[in-house]
Amino acid sequence: MTMLGAFFMTALLNFGLPKGSLEDPTIKLFGRAGFSISKSSRSYKPCWDDSDLDGRFVRAQEMSRYVEDGFFDCGLTGRDWVEENASDVEIVSDLIYSRASNRISKWVLAVPEQSEIHSVVDLEGKSIATELVGVTKKYLEKHGVKAEVEFSWGATEVKVPDLVDAIVDLTETGGSLRANKLRIVDVLMETNTVLIANKKSWQDPQKKSKIENISLMLQAALHADTKVGLKLNIKKEKLDEVIKEMPALRRPTVSSLSDDSWVALETVIEKKVSRELIPALKRMGAEGIVEYPLNKIVL
Image (tube, rainbow, N blue to C red; front, side):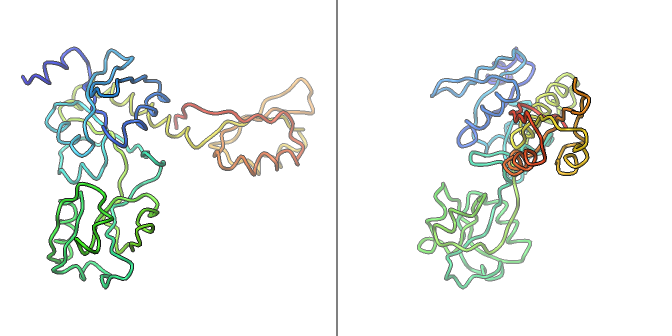
């Protein structure tokens, strides 16, 4: 047994948390899901409020290898790094969040705006810089193109055109690429954070149940991120009109009030919809309109 394995013997799950850009968003997500995680500024060991959990912070790029090898029972990483490492792990769930937004990110082939490279075939004999070396090589092989692929330690977008002809880089909005006067030629893959599990751990009923519970709560916290609860009172005669305008997860809940001519209505809506919906409801005669935040939504 390795020293790392011996250290984790007391916990039900050895959980790998991503170090780096995903670290703070992950701690906040777990907090919204009901798990408190704390650590000192230089520590790689999280402190959980759940005695079943222990683990370490490691780079997302390495996580899938540690999970596959059994150092961790489960962990959070990017779908891109699972593919890059060719890791044989169980992908439990997609958790779409990052340091900047809750969007799916893309690995894209990009070149300077004035470059003569307009498709993958134009890369023949050229040089490419990227962190995602394995996936990029497979992409070129798929298209029958031979090009030099070199590993980039970061700040990849500044390496063209002086050091390389093209880059494969991760983007959410494309803003950084545009700021560096780069043009997207192709999308190699879409990626997002995933919860992964070791295959052997996934076969253990107790561990699998715990992992599934954590997955459910993390997804519930993410679902609640973009939604709010809404309550209001409306005259019965206006109810059908209001319901037609109400974008709800299902049909809204309608309750009777002490005044038989009025009803109370409660629902869940997209957060961004409320800025237009609430004024519209007010114009329809709604009163006592209350918008409130949500911690979790289980679909």
